[in-house]
Image (cartoon, rainbow, N blue to C red):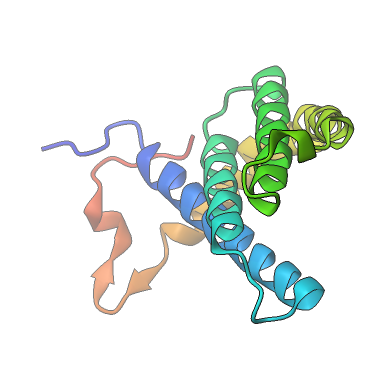
Length: 150
């Protein structure tokens, strides 16, 4: 029985997990250092983690530079506006639209740049590590049959 005949699934899941974990940790540390450890906004942590997970997942899809740029721009816009809404308890008048626009443009540029061009190389390097990894006595490659890098 083939669970993943083209081998994309483990890379997408790994990208999602890594993106979520990194973004969540950065959000917690950033808020803790800036606002104090008793003032961490868990809604902001959840938003940052979700956006990081989506970004991590999409990094391994092979969608190409232009697709990556548009998705990155969209995530930058959503992150900026969402963060402002969370910090203002949903007050749309407090959204910094200039910052949202700048984040959209910056994220578009980053998505179109080296990150998109290197995503295939990164996914192959990650696959080289994942395919040789064991958790306890379980070989991760045995979870999927005929897994190949993206």
